[in-house]
Length: 450
Image (cartoon, rainbow, N blue to C red; front, side, top):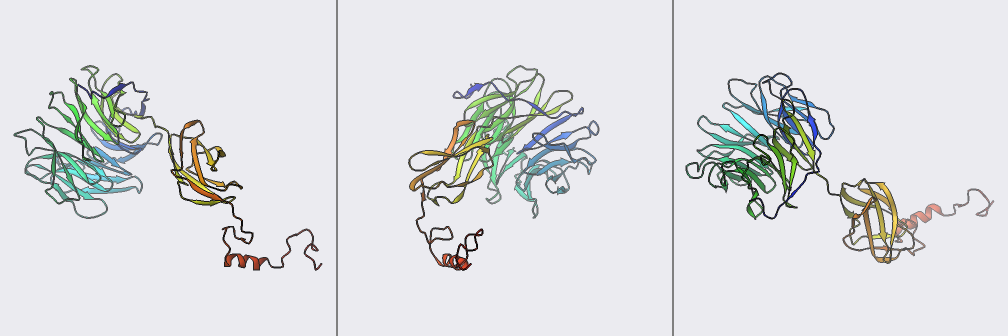
């Protein structure tokens, strides 16, 4: 069974290399266009953190300290990771802000800190207290670390989005195995709640906004992908098949995972769009594709090319335009200048049209899609039923217009000297400044008194 309402679509995604260094790259993480990964170019077994901006940025060494740097996570311009530079099996959490070139020791306390995640400026991780694993957090902008969950059982593999933290929890291991729990950081300590307590171990949760995903063995030991909507709709199936699906990740409407439906000798990367209910084979190349991560337009993964490289693909961007200004209720004077504003994606050039209450007229066409354009309102318009439309110059079906009508009127006040269609003291000041001034610079006798 696989999402009865879903449809399988052939991917038209084109894979591209993110990093093809001759040594091994693994465990990619991404937020926006910043992708980070574990890299062995400085020696086999010597794991470092590298990063780059997609699609064409240069590679940057984030951390090449002694020991291994692993398990990176990214939010905005900040990369966090698990760091063993201290040695002795005592891992710590470090971070680096690519926008300020600032290295940050997030947590170097005794015992292990592992598997960090980050959202905004909040970092979470699992920490060993001498007998079991707990979940901790810290704000990079200041303050001490604090407990997210320190139940007597193990809590592991945390993920964070906004103020929600999810993790794998063993408090019910004698009944249902490992479960998925969640806590709102704005709620008091100890207020965590169960997301999934199905039979077997629910592993590797991820979260974006209100959507939580994880791998789940309740149907078969090969694992399937399930999700949960904190917004009120609760649990839902993402991929339930006889073959193995695991390592899920979520961003917006996209859920991606590692999938073995095409044979037992290799894993592929698949995705499901919650808005269109379409399943997409993102990468079904020969060999293994592992550890997918997704953010916005991009999905990245470790690809079995050579000793292991990082590859990516971009989801198609659906072209759209939204008019911001004028959007209804404004009042413009015929002949005056105003700015039209809009938001868009997937559009190169635009056409701007004005409805004068009777018909549409083109104001500009083929102009660069900068999101704004200054226009001179045509003279002669006098209507309360005006609209502005912005469309894709190459595709008229991609368009939007003002949500409601606005007014353009002709100013008939001859004594208005300042152009605001209102006669006030400012107009008298302008009149005084022009009193007895001759308006013909080519004929000194034009105004009399030669």
